[in-house]
Image (cartoon, rainbow, N blue to C red):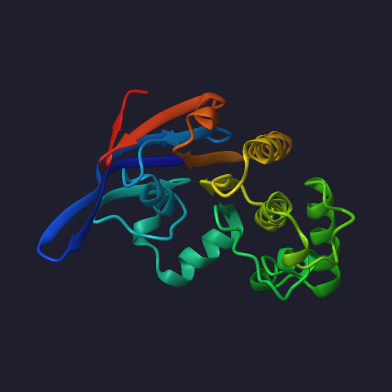
Length: 222
């Protein structure tokens, strides 16, 4: 699935040069469930952006199914993200004026899915995360946990092979956090997805079948 070799991401801040990633080597097999933990600013989100093709390394390679993402054009990267990768973020990123169903459908528009099929797949995705009766609600009518369920449904409706989650429970209370993790784990198991999540929450890290720690851009033993 993924093979990262010598991945470095260097940023310039004024006169300073900062390595967000400093020579990361990492293999993620098809169907892996991996949690990346570590302190804020340690490079976790940068690593996830590399896996999702949202950023390119300063040096090194990020292979997805044998193809180096860094070598692809922006147009082809967009296609790969649409075909293979779903994203879940801490801030939900829902469109406030659209209903839950319409928000989920937005993931299918760039793929050329016809309206009737979009509606069907969006309704099924929302039902799979426990929101089958909330299709017509806008985000402001939903709780934080329900909004994150909509975001998960939006990521899953594309039928991706990889689900990448960046602090997906960071804005939620502990009870809702555990509910969302149950949903994520169940859907990944059901669909056989490769799942990579970054978090600073040690409780979530302990749930992971595979755990790595990223500190100052370097992977260290967990």
